[in-house]
Length: 98
Image (cartoon, rainbow, N blue to C red; front, side, top):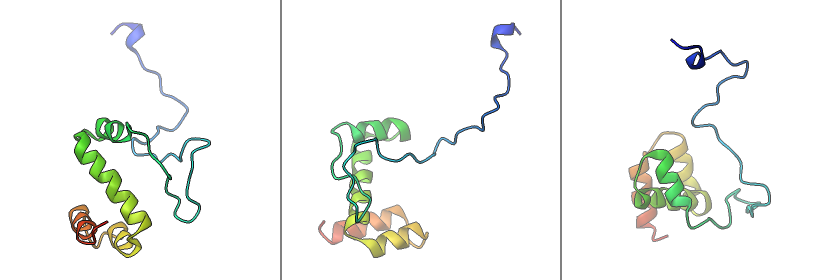
């Protein structure tokens, strides 16, 4: 193997693919809920590219996240605790007419 293709181990720990990052500096965040007050028009497309989903599905996921964080704290707690799945959370959010 050529020397240019050798990879030396890094001293830094590997960063997880799912590492959480906070909002960008200066982003408008609601203090009560911790949710961004607005989102960019391309947020759904960027999420779709990262997750390998379509932009429509990614947009639904973003909307569900906002609905759970802002309007449905009980459903959010059940979803975070693993009591209900994403499909059930989407059904509850749609049934409440958010």
